[in-house]
Image (tube, rainbow, N blue to C red; front, side):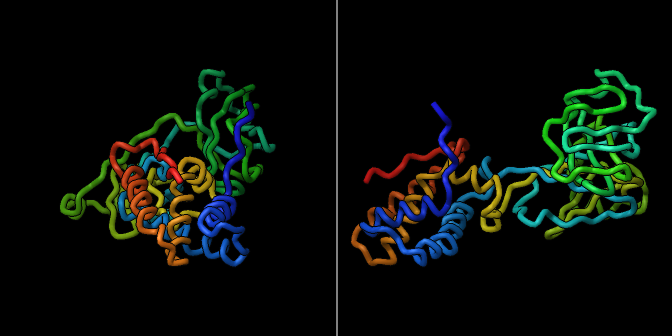
Length: 284
């Protein structure tokens, strides 16, 4: 049996409106559902809980030499943790294709030292990407966990990661009491301040940071994989939400009863026991 295709937001909105209106929705009505009511549903979930497993993601941030303060990712609601990557193999690529990377000519490491390690691009074309090396014939990574989104070139620098060290989250008083605020070294701690975070020591070179965080549902990119995952897993919630909001807009007498069902779905999604994200569709 074939895996069902991913649902689309327009498909869900159209079907929910058809159920509520008893007719096909116009293009203007569907546009309103997409532009106004989908964000409203995200807001309803977010106000109940902003830390659902489905909206957890990780961004690669390149901490650069001498720079201590960094902005949150644009769609970040709350940082979960930060891990710094490092390794002894840092150099410049010789070349690359969409699915390979040739490291410095002197890299004669054996398979055990390369296969399974992450190759992180530090600067130049394609920087910020990381791929696991799945095949190795020195000095080339002959297979990667995924193709490069942007193919690096011979001036791109890289790191073969062999250490992953979580940064400790500092408190303000201890942070402010630190006497040497300009020490250059590998970061070991971070401190949040508003929509930024500072790391200490100040980086002495480029370090990839894996910033794991909860996505702010009210800022989720509707073209992103995260949104597709939400549509697939919370399909019945989106359907019920659009259904209810259409009934409300039409002043339909079914709205109060269906709104109670919608609230129940929101409660199940945002409750601590619903981390899988699955909810039961309304029976009507």
